[in-house]
Length: 81
Length: 81
Image (cartoon, rainbow over all chains, first blue to last red; front, side, top):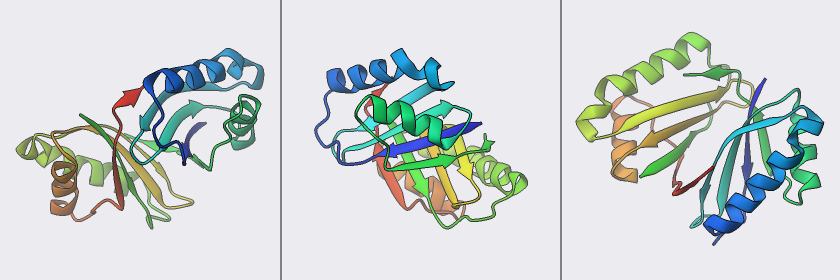
């Protein structure tokens, strides 16, 4: 299943911090059966979006919690175009 | 520039409605210099995400307004991974 998760409050996140956070998730995602396909960040509003393929919402959150940045929202997105 | 926009209140959107809305945007996007690269929908919460390449936030909104579904949030996402 595909999921889109949203992190807020990341105002001012730098390209380096963003890549490090994504790399930390990628390093352990396999242990939870998750694959983060893409991530996008808006440093101005502090919003980060992550698109993943995962077995469940909980699995997505476990990865983000283990790497220290739990998501504020996680939506299953069964429709895509 | 890349943008992520969010539509809320689309609870129960069907695959057909979602594809029709995306196709309506795609049909006129060139007139505003916008290209919608991907869109994802969560019918349960009624949330739709659209990723675009566009000259400005206003250009993204003009396309969505002309096709009858203005976005609730539009974020520039200069960082991606």
